Length: 406
Image (cartoon, rainbow, N blue to C red; front, side, top):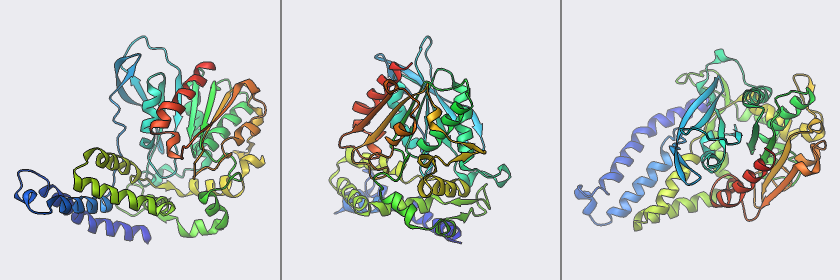
């Protein structure tokens, strides 16, 4: 019922937000007489803030048209290589001949936001790598006839993409997918699969959430599994293709994101208002771009979400060595020929210190010279894969690691 009420509220707010958007433009457009009235800047700023707080945010585009390669601009073509019910594999194809660059599979999180959250990650890697990314589908857009999507299915998807792109492949996982990616590669190693990647880079993920637990980890352990089943799972309403599918709705996830740091978000919106009032366009546009991405969320399949809560955050099945996928035990110690690089942020409040580094203890079969770890100083969770520290510090280190083991 909550999902239906949310949709009812959204349908009510849509014309109101359109009115707020139009009013904001009337008070800023130089040809409008209202733009020349007293306090027009403040009125316009108030309307725009109202519009942005209440509007519905659609999935953004990657919108990467070109990249500098060895000082020359190269056009980028976004090409869908594989389309599956719950995911698309996208290739950022360079419109240039003769380029021989390491192939990278960037596994994006399926944890609330769209894969475009990694736009800066993709852009940073593109200069020296041939980049593919997993683009997960909003579960409310997947008809019930396509069947369920389990955590095991996520692992099978990753394995399929690895086999498609191997052997000269490097896998990078950001946050949530570090766990299923490690499981996927572990199972391939146990089966002596010839399509193994050369490296796996794991960034800010909950490999072992028992280490330095954060607010996210505490929520998963303090609440019973039945609480998640009964409190956050709802059926998709009839106005979407996935009508009837059980999901963890994006709007609930977004509320959770905001609740983690309400003061920070409130301050950001206050500063946005003042930037609009003073005509400080650059930081105002930066705010728009960040929240266009941050506020765009997707629904997760209920079975996938619940199994992740139970397997990763409550039973700690991966570090405990008890996780079975399709009846096969997940054994990271069986990996011997895939180089491992872990990246953490010193100030990460999503995946605490040591949670990603735990992969080194689990992957005991990888020689020491093929393992590397880096903790980015003064870097929070999102700074690991976007922003200045990502571009100037972390991305070059990943590039060096990939080159070393290519």
